[in-house]
Image 1 (cartoon, rainbow, N blue to C red):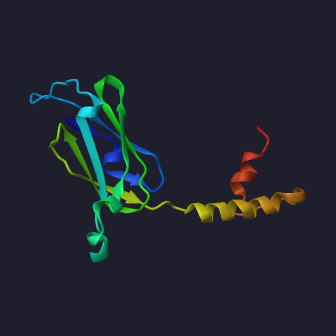
Image 2 (image 1 turned 90 degrees about the horizontal axis):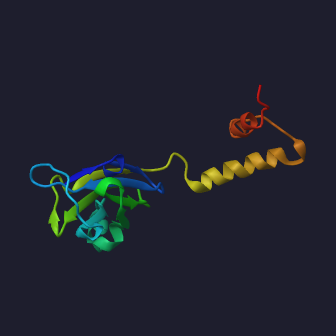
Image 3 (image 1 turned 90 degrees about the vertical axis):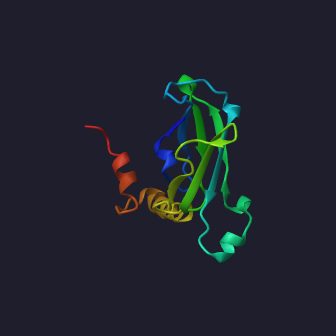
Length: 148
């Protein structure tokens, strides 16, 4: 099998991410396999002793498999916690070459609460047409300019 895509090696917290699994025979010829023939398990690597003692299900990331284009199987997931994760891909119970794969999940540049707070501050500045330019209002300012 050929397992590829940026989602196999890298992701961002709370971002929908995908990678592809293309079944191939021993001679690298593309073959056809049902989606149900594959299984994918994604686990966060434990960061300390308490994390390692927790059941694997507590570190698991839900992965959904669906039929993709040209006989590929598409794996989709959304990681909730940053850190190193291992992705194990199996075809009919046997790990494919290269499995498990290491995926680094990065934290978002801004957490959703911080982003919402900045948007709320910008909205307050726009009340009653009191437009004040600031770093957090610049995207709004620029998006409301009339085209030239």
